[in-house]
Image 1 (cartoon, rainbow, N blue to C red):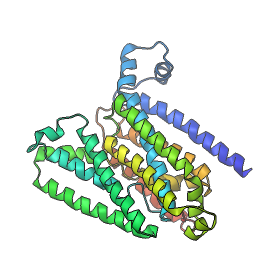
Image 2: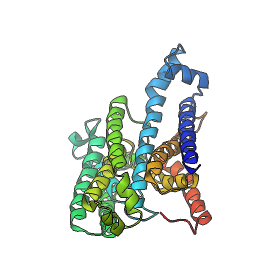
Image 3: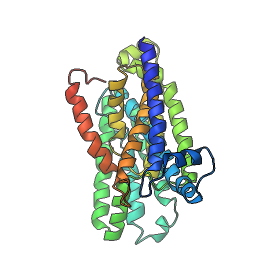
Length: 338
């Protein structure tokens, strides 16, 4: 009976994702009928202008929401299990901060070094390289440190160091460059093209595939490192793959969408309310679906349906997510265990 309930929950999440995906495409400054959305998605005859709006603008944005939400949800689940800390998010290793530092340098140094920001891929490449540098530091630290708590502290200190460097660059920058960086730091899923989406799809697929093969170590890690060792889990190898998959997904998402707050932190807890289990074979697909749903919902609200104004994505994720997470903690104060 319990297995049937879990399967039914995953089915409901999947259907919810499909419905919210279509709603996200239909809503915006120009309202598009639901039937027109379905006609375009299934390549049926429809108005050419509406088809262009959907295929060139709204479908890439909605697809980016699905991919980014899936990666952040899975990354958050892994980090919370890996560190046995319910407040650990996918950016806890300092990857987003490393990406932000290189992006800050790329954007804020354009006045003195114009060639740095001349490429349309410059921001994405800078974010990727920044996350990669932090990833290398984390991997080196993970080989030296025996316990995960120390690795968590290293990640937090790297984030603090990079944040201080970003603050210095902001202080020395011009107003226009500073505004460009602030807009990037607020997060956005509306600036990706199909070439970038193909890259994002490939990386998220690889990251989730690695994560799926880490299900057994994650389940054993929940019961402690000693138990994991007793059943033959290679902790060093598992640690490497878990950090690698999280770094791949979070670094790439930050590169194309900016640092998106809250989603990876809250989704695992919200999913556990719907499906009360610690089995990562169930939790992993559920958090992937839940992350996509939450980011689609936040993006839909950020579009201010019927208006040309667009709110910062992080403002919506935090505005909705923080009260929800507080409610989850209070409602489950005795159960708020990873």
